[in-house]
Image (spheres, rainbow, N blue to C red):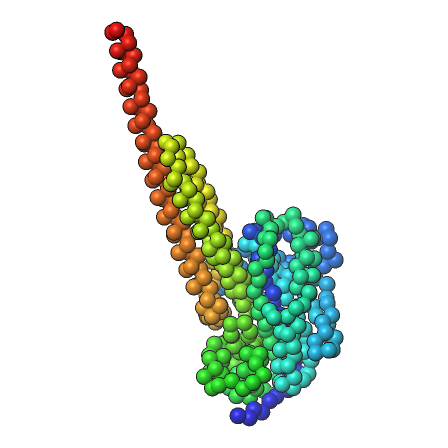
Length: 374
């Protein structure tokens, strides 16, 4: 299949790296700390084109502009700008943006894949570690219960702002071959694989296009709006946090079973206290995870913007966020049921203790009465 490939006039490549840095982040303290130590100002995020009543952040994250960096991509130096966006539920999204000037479509695809090789999941780059250490060292007081092991998500975007000729967006994939950019593959893919990659296509105006895949997206946006980029970041942040709590509960359930088993083997009447203590611990865990997952679920509030809502919902589905969320809910349900059973057992044990106390008192009364009559 041959393609008439228009020239790319203006474009950028954005590599996202999202990490779970803490259980929560005090965004007000972040702004204060950044104002003390940094040369650039912080800002609260808002969507650039969507009306606030139609689509808005639940709690607007804080955007920090970090120092630019130099990347060597395919042996050539590239200037890159860096930002970090901090969410109140503990996620930090780093974005490295590389500008792409006028070039052919094939060389733009090569640049996207080269950025992925330098910064993507399989890269052995120290850049992300250095950026994480920089933010963490400056903002440590604002991190509530910092994470020891940093869970992460990566996402790559190729964004074209202008071609050298008008290209109809409904047939753009017939004029430029999007598949090598979306897949990162050098070999030709089967027709079925190509169709799968191009299935998630969205347009609102006659001159914009979004194509989503699991780990990459292509965006054609001549007006420079960043709303789609922002909601893709939020969707990835939600996936990251739900994965964190899914893994946390995976680790907690075996410990819970062991504690319950150990508590059941306590034969003395004072076991009620141990049941009650374990029930309180489980209730606290459920409350904490539920609070955070609600924050994650409400990270972006969509009401009236149908187009962005469709892109957002499709991204969540594509990233399997509902599946992970359901898994978290199922594990929370198991812990809630265990809490309820332990609470009932603790109540039963307390009842047994009261009955024994009453029996002891009756026996004491009988003994005293017998002694008096002797």
